[in-house]
Amino acid sequence: MKKKIDNATGLTSFQKKVLKAVLAIPQGQTRSYAWVAEKAGSPGASRAVGQTLSKNPFAPEVPCHRVIASNGTIGGYSGGVAKKRRILKDEGVVFTI
Image 1 (spheres, rainbow, N blue to C red):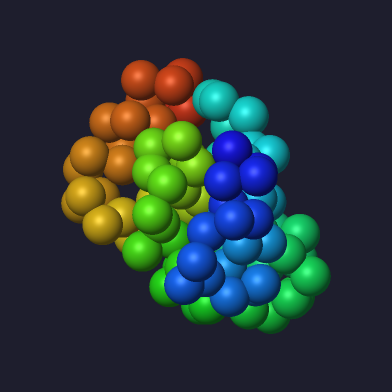
Image 2: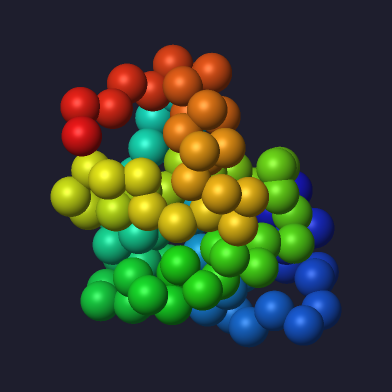
Protein backbone atom coordinates (compact mmCIF):
# COMPACT_ATOMS: atom_id res chain seq x y z
CA MET A 1 0.00 0.00 0.00
CA LYS A 2 2.88 2.40 0.73
CA LYS A 3 4.08 2.02 -2.85
CA LYS A 4 0.55 2.72 -4.10
CA ILE A 5 0.50 5.91 -2.01
CA ASP A 6 3.95 6.94 -3.26
CA ASN A 7 2.84 6.51 -6.87
CA ALA A 8 -0.48 8.30 -6.45
CA THR A 9 -0.85 11.40 -8.56
CA GLY A 10 -2.67 14.47 -7.30
CA LEU A 11 -1.42 14.10 -3.71
CA THR A 12 1.08 16.42 -2.06
CA SER A 13 4.07 15.01 -0.21
CA PHE A 14 2.37 16.00 3.07
CA GLN A 15 -0.80 14.11 2.11
CA LYS A 16 1.25 11.03 1.25
CA LYS A 17 3.01 11.22 4.61
CA VAL A 18 -0.35 11.50 6.39
CA LEU A 19 -1.74 8.45 4.63
CA LYS A 20 1.40 6.43 5.42
CA ALA A 21 1.26 7.48 9.08
CA VAL A 22 -2.34 6.29 9.31
CA LEU A 23 -1.28 2.91 7.92
CA ALA A 24 0.81 2.46 11.08
CA ILE A 25 -2.24 2.55 13.37
CA PRO A 26 -3.00 -1.04 14.41
CA GLN A 27 -6.50 -2.45 14.17
CA GLY A 28 -8.39 -1.90 17.42
CA GLN A 29 -6.39 1.21 18.28
CA THR A 30 -6.82 4.91 17.61
CA ARG A 31 -4.49 7.88 17.32
CA SER A 32 -5.19 11.59 17.34
CA TYR A 33 -5.05 13.99 14.43
CA ALA A 34 -2.13 15.64 16.28
CA TRP A 35 -0.27 12.30 16.47
CA VAL A 36 -0.69 11.83 12.72
CA ALA A 37 0.49 15.39 12.05
CA GLU A 38 3.60 14.80 14.13
CA LYS A 39 4.34 11.48 12.40
CA ALA A 40 3.90 13.22 9.04
CA GLY A 41 6.58 15.72 10.07
CA SER A 42 4.25 18.68 10.56
CA PRO A 43 3.39 19.10 14.23
CA GLY A 44 0.51 21.50 14.60
CA ALA A 45 -1.05 20.53 11.26
CA SER A 46 -3.97 18.61 12.79
CA ARG A 47 -6.56 20.44 10.69
CA ALA A 48 -4.62 19.65 7.51
CA VAL A 49 -4.57 16.00 8.56
CA GLY A 50 -8.35 16.11 8.91
CA GLN A 51 -8.69 17.67 5.46
CA THR A 52 -6.43 15.02 3.95
CA LEU A 53 -8.34 12.18 5.58
CA SER A 54 -11.69 13.60 4.53
CA LYS A 55 -10.58 12.93 0.94
CA ASN A 56 -8.80 9.61 1.58
CA PRO A 57 -8.62 7.94 -1.85
CA PHE A 58 -7.50 4.63 -0.35
CA ALA A 59 -10.20 3.96 2.23
CA PRO A 60 -10.65 1.46 3.79
CA GLU A 61 -7.09 0.18 3.13
CA VAL A 62 -5.82 3.37 4.75
CA PRO A 63 -7.91 3.25 7.95
CA CYS A 64 -8.72 6.92 8.47
CA HIS A 65 -11.55 5.88 10.82
CA ARG A 66 -8.86 5.15 13.44
CA VAL A 67 -8.00 8.84 13.77
CA ILE A 68 -9.86 10.71 16.52
CA ALA A 69 -9.66 14.05 18.30
CA SER A 70 -6.98 14.59 20.97
CA ASN A 71 -9.63 14.85 23.67
CA GLY A 72 -10.84 11.32 22.89
CA THR A 73 -13.98 12.31 21.03
CA ILE A 74 -14.76 10.64 17.74
CA GLY A 75 -13.96 13.56 15.42
CA GLY A 76 -15.29 13.68 11.89
CA TYR A 77 -15.83 11.04 9.24
CA SER A 78 -17.03 11.38 5.68
CA GLY A 79 -19.35 8.40 6.15
CA GLY A 80 -20.86 9.93 9.28
CA VAL A 81 -19.88 9.81 12.94
CA ALA A 82 -22.28 6.94 13.72
CA LYS A 83 -20.65 4.79 11.05
CA LYS A 84 -17.16 5.66 12.33
CA ARG A 85 -18.17 4.73 15.88
CA ARG A 86 -19.66 1.42 14.63
CA ILE A 87 -16.52 0.52 12.65
CA LEU A 88 -14.29 1.27 15.63
CA LYS A 89 -16.56 -0.70 17.96
CA ASP A 90 -16.36 -3.65 15.56
CA GLU A 91 -12.54 -3.39 15.80
CA GLY A 92 -12.75 -3.50 19.60
CA VAL A 93 -12.24 0.17 20.42
CA VAL A 94 -14.02 1.23 23.61
CA PHE A 95 -14.97 4.87 24.03
CA THR A 96 -15.28 6.45 27.46
CA ILE A 97 -16.45 9.79 26.08
